[in-house]
Length: 171
View 1: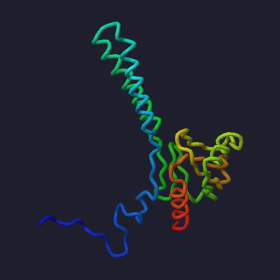
View 2: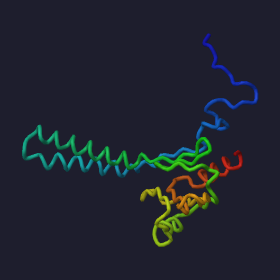
View 3: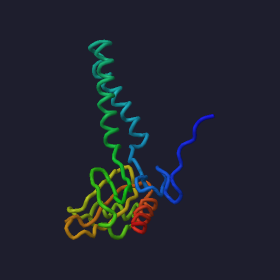
View 4: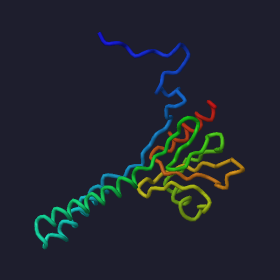
């Protein structure tokens, strides 16, 4: 018989449960789409073909070096995360307390494109990914912060908006 995990006292949330303040209510990694990995493979192949006239060893070296470089670039670009955790919205390198945020506007593809282009404010914090067509726009209400709003590309804008609202209501 294996020992069971200790249970929290009555009324306290279990660690890692959605009710726990440290558990993320929303967590999304803006990973690059699969088609980009096909491009990474084609770049690796072209690196090998460029070094083909130099022999087999340079061919393998070119294939590996270009493949690894392209893979690292695609992976790092797709490593951006959006999280709602511990009373804060964490988007890329930005961390904003939910109490400093105002209305959350879910943007469809057309509105997201408008807010990325002609409606954009240069002072806004924008975490954009071209391969994610939808987004949210969250007004920053902190008077000490010059950022008017956050523009965040997300595959689940409704879920992000709901998570921000849930943290705001809980806190």
